Image (cartoon, rainbow, N blue to C red; front, side, top):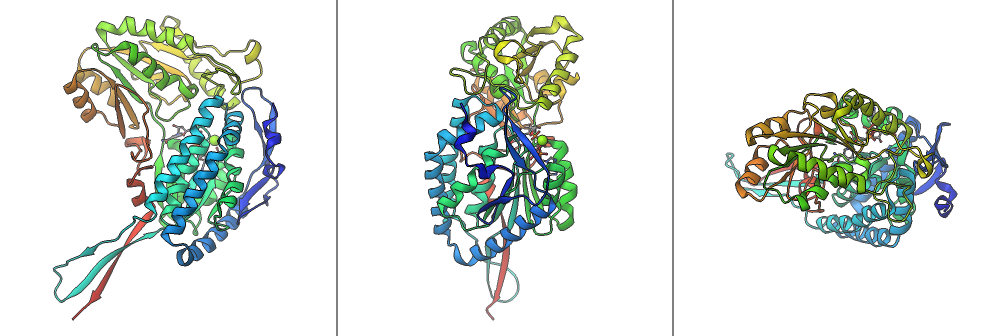
Length: 491
Ligand code: NAP
Ligand code: MG
């Protein structure tokens, strides 16, 4: 199948600026690679600081124009039209995302389809943004009120693991609140984000309101983060990169919001319904080949059911069908890149230092179907201490560590003993245990008796090294707007 041929060649070596695809100013490019086969797909032009300058200039002009010309209803209707067009293009965008990133096709299409309602949700907010009137106690008589205003130009810096949803998590709140946005996709998954340009034009977005520039993080990403013409950075990626962005953004006191990584605990109490908990906890860590920020990678199991749980999780892991992203029935695709494979293999090497503690997996797959891609099996490490590197570092591969515990106090301590605080899971039918754990766990989201539920209305984000600010839901609107006080003297 030659999916790339379905996409116009103008995606090659270009950026989408001011409503047009045009060649990047820089000479540099990189090949998009299908991680299922190692095949070269298309050359991506890597924008540099001059491309970013052009994108920022165009976005600022578009922002100023939109402040006057685009009414809330216009912004609502743009997002509604965008939703319609995404719905029409689910198959092709999903296929491109699958091929470029290695996500199984049905999952990739589902991820694109989820953006349709996401656009509609934020379309609704465009007409529901309010300031306040305030009765003050200041001496004299005043009419005092606030205006909720957009920030200006937002930079949306996104990772490769769910590129299209990540783009919409930033684009929709930015546009509904009246900002302009520049998207900088990750090198490993730029094509599917660049492909959105054509759809934005068809939806009638004014030129420059959304620009898309691929490029290396340390060049294009850094240029955006330090640019005087950018008012906010909305970033999803690693904590290490977030620290770079924080420093770079100091130039003009940019607002920043960070959706970062995790090493999330998933707690199985002895009374849990294992028929339900095993596939939930298994998918939470192995799904998307473990390349998910909320992956439930540290599984804590109450001691009486520990051995049974490990046996059943192993059977579940070994039942998952691994293969190329476009093959029928595949549940787990390859890792995204050779670099990611190398990273995951380095943790396999650490695991091999204690071979008796590998319940399953731990070795790259290289035979037959797997020979040219970056395939690894779901891997379970048992009894590695919670302080070990394997249990503490975000691997971003399908690797679970499973540890027993005896009391709630102990599992709270173990769960919170990490620099991260993104997500957590709890499986129990005992209401008081469920709510006690939900209260004590340091995480931005706690899922009880399921893992990973999400909705446009539920705000999402982390604590500790997992970042700050919230994406999705009503709370994201605060991060894309600023409040101005107005005092009118009446006496
Ligand atoms: P990453 O290396 O931090 O990259 C994320 C984005 O930042 C990419 O577009 C990257 O560009 C760019 N970047 C790199 N260096 C930069 C710099 N100095 N200045 C500005 N931008 C820079 O992360 P990743 O490897 O793509 O993604 C994996 C990480 O993201 C994991 O830690 C994962 O947990 C986290 N993640 C979190 C969430 C969440 O919602 N919390 C969701 C998904 C992923 P290039 O790659 O093109 O160089
Ligand atoms: Mg990267």
